Length: 218
Length: 218
DNA sequence: CCTACCGATCGGTAGG
DNA sequence: CCTACCGATCGGTAGG
Image 1 (spheres, chains in turn red, purple, green, blue):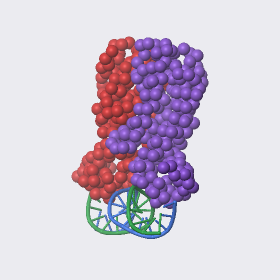
Image 2 (cartoon, rainbow over the protein chains, first blue to last red; image 1 turned 180 degrees about the horizontal axis):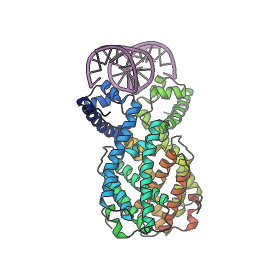
Image 3 (cartoon, each protein chain N blue to C red; image 1 turned 90 degrees about the vertical axis):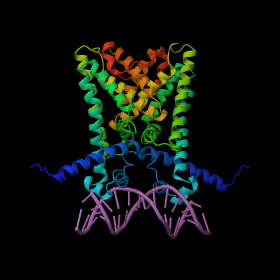
Image 4 (cartoon, protein in one colour; image 1 turned 30 degrees about the horizontal axis):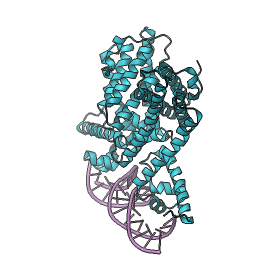
């Protein structure tokens, strides 16, 4: 039943282009700051054109979250997977890529999910639920990577995988916030240094930490 | 030239009451989500009444930020100062009070400044500047407390005070986010455990960590 | 995808 | 502090 014609193809391309602009806009102005009119102006499509593609504003927000997750996976998860086999090195690569994703401003306003999380943490509804689900997928992936490294003896057997993931993610997200507010790359060095120390304390070998990124001076 | 009459007094009480509601609303709906009309409804004061008290929306936002900082200092800094003299114990008390301030939902939507920081990190202007300034005052206070502990030999001489403050604050803020999104108090236990380990690694004595709060199980 | 339009709400002001 | 009002923008729909 697949319809393959010009209209359908054009429609999907338009939708993808609008979503790309929308996720960038949302990372700066917030997901609730998105407006059909504002997005129309940013894409040179009429406001009702936007509405006809996505339906309601909430459906637009949900589409933007799904699109942002695709962008995140492409920028962080896939490169880390491609760069190194599972183990302590994969954990380091995931965090290293996360820091680069934030530092490179893949989203103009910094990590999309950090912003969206704080924006919707107290506003119940489908938007909050979608943000939570995306966060959990990322956290679970990091936890699973840590667990695998423990099983293979690349991290100490007594390591609490969820605790370690919590601490590593805390450092990354705080680097994101501090960098944006202080307009500085120094927080990424701080985060890298702390993550390195934490993984070494958890029994990782120094050679496994290469993909975390450059060691800060001192 | 101080005018002390009924009008002035009533005006200040009204202003204080409106700000209290406004900072609560802003912690949930965001600082940009504040509206003169919405705040009017929440306070049973007319919209133009709100406008006459604060002038513009931006001036309202700046007043809310200043009020939120007063609330923060009252909830976190003053109790920590009152509870323990300067030193490693003060550092532990500051972080312990910060976690309690977040966990107790002093602001309905969790830490006001965590939310406001991510909301305005990419939107230049006076609001962003005010948030940055408030954050810096807090960070500088924590850094100064750490430095004092180092000078008095309560933390290791080689401790990097700014690095340590960065790591401790990262853990607190991540606990705030995780708790709000997962609707759980468990992240505060994780943060406390990590902060305790980090301060011990920096040379703090276990007895100085009492005011950090209860040790998590295990 | 468009034009044209809806009622509601936005920030803000006049005038008291 | 109020009522009354302004133009602009909001999300959304009718009809094509």
